[in-house]
Image 1 (cartoon, rainbow, N blue to C red):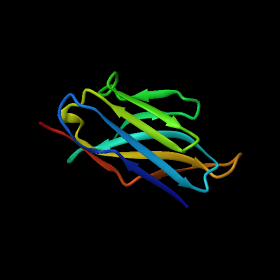
Image 2 (image 1 turned 45 degrees about the vertical axis):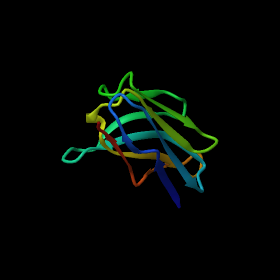
Image 3 (image 1 turned 90 degrees about the vertical axis):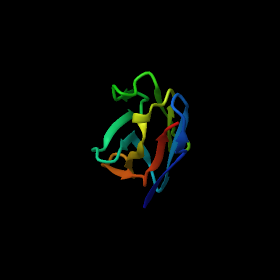
Image 4 (image 1 turned 120 degrees about the horizontal axis):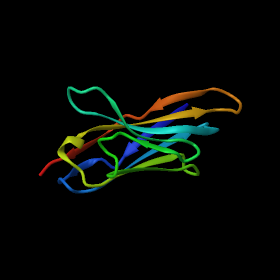
Length: 121
């Protein structure tokens, strides 16, 4: 089985920074796309950033220029560096990984349990 665990959330003042981490463990052959989502109370879950196995990145318009996604394949870990945080960034942040157990073969999605980010003065 695969476990996906996020960490790094917390309370930060507007304009501050946080770095989220998401580590996947288990009998993983490789991980294709790794993504960060967030969900605020009363809102749908939205994709914040993604990174492919080749390193191509994509960001939601609301976070472009403020958030940076990166990955360390040796650790099966993806990071989200968040800067210039705003109150509207407050949400539970979830990580999703597309995992392959063999090549060639299909990929399966695994979600973490989420980590709370609160931006408030």
